[in-house]
Length: 327
Length: 296
Image 1 (tube, rainbow over the protein chains, first blue to last red):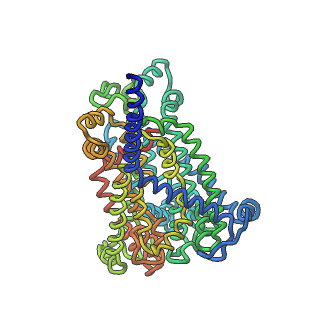
Image 2 (cartoon, each protein chain N blue to C red):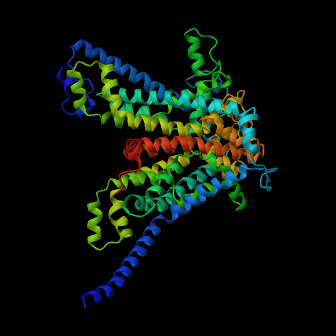
Image 3 (cartoon, rainbow over the protein chains, first blue to last red):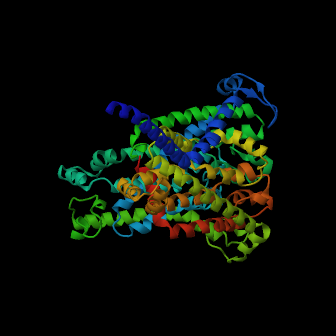
């Protein structure tokens, strides 16, 4: 009798369980459907389209392509005379601009932790440049660094340097000028470092002081290990942001060259002067939209995807807490 | 002396120099610290001040290295509105920022809840994909997406930038999820004991508790759309009726052969709404910025 009722009861509970599971799936779907659809439409499909297009050659925007195999990639890696310059410029930004931003942000944050009075006023002032729209900031710096008549060259003249740099108008100084602009807007990095520095347990500093550690040793052996996860996070997100560096370089080049970024000829001033500010994304844009080299631009996009993805993998591997913590 | 070594009211963590020092030395440090801080503050403010001062100069003076306007041309601002359809640009920008923010909230809050508080297969994978989506450069998918929007006849409008937010914004989902994870499970369990379903729990319990996080992502979205240059450049550069303030600012130098004083006046007009918003919502903003980095 008991075995029989158990046999009868089991399909019932299984059905209840299955019904509950289906209802749970529907609930999850009701929360996640838009985002999942967004991933499909705005990430997966365009990625596949980009890979597919990169294997084709196109005559004009919107015309069907002709199979080209790995021809675009071959051209990219072995023949394109401009890609080496674009990749070099982006590498320059990664190697010089990102560390410059991190050092500035960390120094500003460290300075704020030392201020006992007026710390919040200084914090607001240091943060303010991050609020200025990118375009306005780039224009302000082109104006500030105008050769000869700009305020900075004017001040240099007052201290005896008559031939100040040509800044945004010199192929040698254009990237350092963009770096100055980047160092100016470090507000967000600073706020992140400030939180990390204030999180370092005071007892560690006290212990180090008892051991007779000086300021540099305290920084090296207490501060640095404590903030290293945040440092790594900032470095990697900084590198990734630099891989898509576009607006500042485009606006500064256009303003410095005296041209306007209007309509179809918009990308005419990209890279001014002498392609010295032509970053990889700018060149990609130029290839895709101004020169109708659709397949080639997509090949560039796929290469950019692979490089960025490798950097993201490092980030996900090294900072596990990023994805953990869900209950 | 005691005030330096042991500040009573200030949080103890801020005191990074606990070793007792002689008085003269600490005065020296005090002066040095403030001198550096003031120098940094001047560097931070100088470009902003220069923009504001130049916006009041005459066209001729704006071409010189002068810092202070000879005569104050307040009418530069009226002139910018006369030379350019600034009202339309402002309206376009507002439409872009407000709609994108509202759409983002509608789609991203539930998705963040699903990633933070619901258990389902593929959840961690989905979250990793969203992190990738947030970090990948926009240029990777730009060309295929651009061609699609052209097919839909949306080229020359701001809709290709607004509509995708209905399907979630990766950065906002990420940030909201990080925020919701910190809400103790007990609150959700209590709501469920009272018979609330997941949606009711989200609306009645989680959203009120996640209000600072929601404020932060809304601000970020508003700011990033207000400042966006790449998107409007991509889709509206051929149609000046759809331009936003940021894009117009970069473009109108050659359009009407406008001088630097007018460029700077337009820059000030673009910056002011952002600054005002920041001063009203500074706390939520800083909290949000911190959250993006500290979790790493």
